[in-house]
Length: 227
Image (cartoon, rainbow, N blue to C red; front, side, top):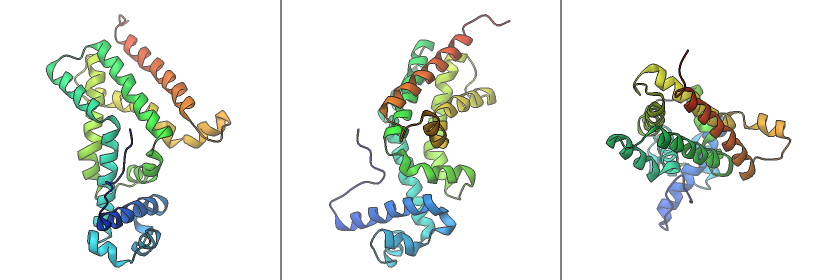
């Protein structure tokens, strides 16, 4: 599936706007919001600095649109499958075995996108937002991050039997999520340890197998008698 961070259009005005968004994504990722100037963003897009005011109003609104685009891209990774799972959860049709399968599919999909997709384009901005959230982070969190995190928590809770609203269930889902995102946050470490020039599909498959094993172990742990 081809995913686009910002909608493409044959309209020249929309193309110019998209060019500014792509340039802003790159510069904000490299230099951060405070250090990336509107002039260097416009220069990178091959446009006049006045184009930013024309299309977005100001730098803050430009950045908010960048985060909005990132949110749309992240939601597209799971796409309709996320809605299917929400439907199964709402109807009570997701059993523990189905939940285990769903978790594996979700994490393999996310992993594949991180390693062999366009996630690298948004990685730096996402990391900066986690380390030092901007005023626009709430929008990204509310529309994208929280719904995904809640979905993972609800699916895992089918296996654990926990209340998906409980702090323990939320932390447990976050810990599981961390097993995937670490291959983005510490990508260079694993690349050097494996002594490869870059991570590819074969590494995504290997990592996916390991995460599958971890999911199986976690799920078995909740079906065994507790001491």
